[in-house]
Image (cartoon, rainbow, N blue to C red):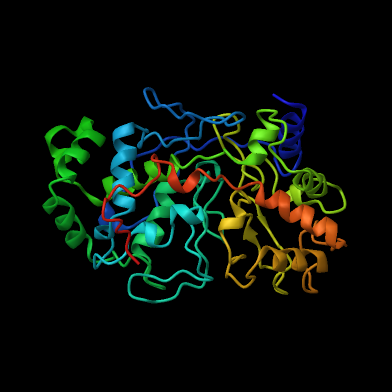
Amino acid sequence: MSLAAAALIALSSACGHVPPETVPSAGDPPPTSEAHRIPAPDLTPRVDGGYAWNLPPGFAPPLVPRHNPMSEAKVELGRRLFFDPAVSGDGSLSCAGCHRPERAFTDGHAQAVGATGQQHPRSSMALINVAYSPSYTWVGDELLQLEDQIRIPLFNEDPIEMGLAGREREMLDRLKADPRYPPLFRAAFAERGARAAEPDVDEVIDALAAYVRSLISAESPYDRRVFADEAGALSPAAERGMELFFSVELACGTCHGGIAFAGPLRSTRSPDTEPQLEHNGLLADAAARFKVPTLRNIALTGPYMHDGRLATLDDVLDHYASGGVPGEGRSEQIRGFSLDEGQRRDLLAFLESLTDDNLATDPRFANPFADGMIGG
């Protein structure tokens, strides 16, 4: 590992890790889908036998819930379900309608739009490397695993997202009527035997979570420079921008640290990391604290912030340079800074170097349907 990589990992350890707590015990399997309840978290560390993570340098295996071990068959089933509009209540919108690979699994809208056309107050978050997130959604820190989070867009009614609440049977009937799915469910949930050909909602959720958990990507110019010591992977401007990003004056890396550029992460190496929300100075409300989003592929994921109010990365730099709106509760790193035009170009060049150009064409993540249907 290069000195730069070692320094980055040290930075992530110093920025936000808290004394560990005991990992919750395994408990019972998730409740039935009809209840739509969020099950108690089961974050028992494990490495799944037989599943090849193919992790980049510096990445530990993610935590995987005991009830939902990873397998190639389950990830493949989840990939098909992710891109299939049949999973929504009325069959009109796939998960990929709001999370497109070519946009680092965001949608390019300031605010997401659900299956019925209702607008969500939040923007669609990038899904790359979310397997390492200590918690999910923009606000709140109660959802600790992907299986919990996936229930929200599926069943939420205010606003309606996938619109599945009350229409579960319609969705399952569509899947059972498609001859491609029964063998995929049997392979993904082989421990259930013949019953696996009759999918239920919890199996749909588990398969989707396995696919999303597999979305690990770190093949950007930054990664080649830092983890592979590839000379010339970063332009001179991006090299200078990297120094600015991690400088004491700008302190960008304090919140956006670690291998995910999203602060402290949870993995088999650090299973006890607690969720962390930050006040980014965007709103005057002292309680307006949000999850720190990843900066990986940030050039692809605009517009920015929780509600898409900032259209460009230049706008984002303007916001943080200003120190944010007056008010109490801002994170201490939001204190403003000055950049001349050359420094601004360098910092933008570094942010653009976090783009993995292979992401949109990676066959592991791609739309499996030849006709390109993704809904929305």
